[in-house]
Length: 170
Image (cartoon, rainbow, N blue to C red):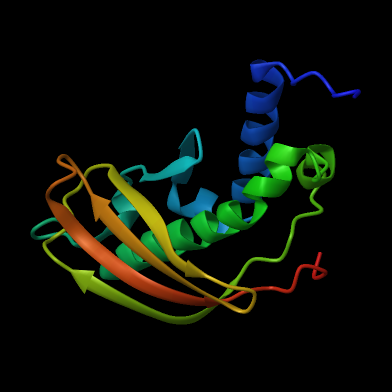
C-alpha cells in the first residue's frame, strides 16, 4: 500500500490562508468598508475596523445601521463560501494558485436577510462570527453575531438565507 506522506503543517496553513485571502480579496466592498477576516482552524472572525465614514449618527456617535448590516451580510457570505470550499481546500482538490489568480467560485446570492439591532454600535472596531445552520445543494441558512468589546454583549445579530451556486458555476 503506497500512501502519500502527510503534507507539512506550514504548507497546509499557507494553502488555507491563501484561499481565504483570495476569497476576501474577491469582494472589493469589504476593502472599502475596512472588513478583514482572520482564520483559526476552520473558524473565521470578521473585523470591521473603525472609520469615521461608518458613523451614522454623529451626535451619539453610533455606527450606521447600513454599515452594520453590510458587515453582517458579508461575514455570512464569506462563512458560507468558506464552508463550501473547506473540504476541497483540505484535500488539495482546489488549486489555490487559480483562486489567487482570480478564478473564484461564485458567491451565494442573498434570498433574505434579517438584522436585529440590539444596541448602538460604538465608534470602535467591531467583530463578527457566523455559523452555518443549514447547508444544502440549493439553499443555506446562516446566523451571524456582532460585538465590539465584549463577546457576550452583542450589538447586532442577523439571520440570512442564501441561494447556493451550483458546483459547476466556476
